[in-house]
Length: 305
Ligand SMILES: [Zn+2]
Image (cartoon, rainbow, N blue to C red; front, top):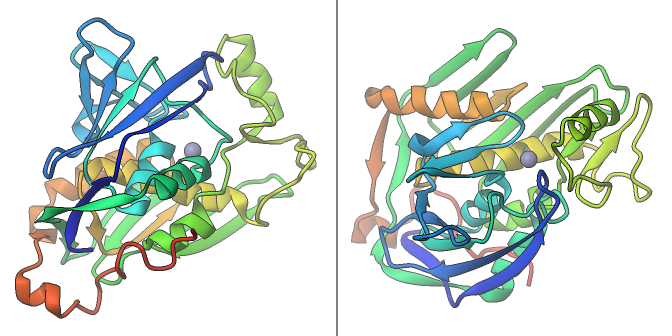
C-alpha cells in the first residue's frame, strides 16, 4: 500500500459506448509517479487531456462526466473504480470516443484485464487522505458521512421495487474484496426508464448484456442477478469510481444512504473544504516497516489470479 503503482505494460481493449451505441477503443499506458490518472480524447485533434479529478466533473446525471480543454468524457466511473480498487495511482488512458465503453455494466472486465496485465510499483510513496474528524452531508433523505477508522464503505439503498427494497452492504477497501465482491455488480435500470431514455436517443448501446433491467415485478435478464444484493453492491462500485476523483486513497470509514453520482461529487467537495477534518499522510520509512492498524492490507493480497 505504500508505493505508488502503474500498469506493468500498456493494455488495449474495446467495447460499446452506452449512450452512442458505437464501439470505443481504449489503450491504458503506464505513467510515472505523481502523474495521476489522466484521460486522453485520442479521437480528437490535438488529443486533449482530461485529468481524473473532482474539479473536472461537469455532469453527474446517470453517469459521471469529466470535462477539460474543451472536450468531455462520459461514464468514467466503472473504469476509475477498477483502477482505484486495484491500487493504480498513475496511468494515461487513451479513449477513442466521447465515452468509456460500458463492457458488461460492471467493473469486472476492467479489473480482470488490469490483473492480467499486472501492476508495478514506482519509487515514490503514495499519499493518502487520512480522515481525522467526521464529515457529513445531508440532502433530504440522502446522506453521506466519513469518520476516522478502517477504510471501508457501507451503502444503503431503499427502492419500492419488490426485488430491491432496502439493501445494505459493507465492503472494506481492499483489492481482493473489490475484485470478488464489488467489481462484478452490474449497473441497473428500470424498463420504463430505459424505454424513455432510448426514445430520447440516449442509452442506445444499453441492453441486457450490459445492465440489469427490472420490470415491475422482476429481472428481465435471463441469467438473473449475480448477487442477491447486486444493486447496492453496484452503488458501492459507483462510489469507488467517484471517490477515485480525489486523486488519492481515502483512509476512513464511509457511509452512504440513497446516494447518487451527484451526492458523491458534492460530498467530495464538502470534505475537501473541511481542512480540519483530514490530513495528507505519506508513510515514512518507519511507518512502512510497521503498518498502522487502520491501513488497508497490501495491494495484491487476495486478488484472484
Ligand atoms: Zn454505475
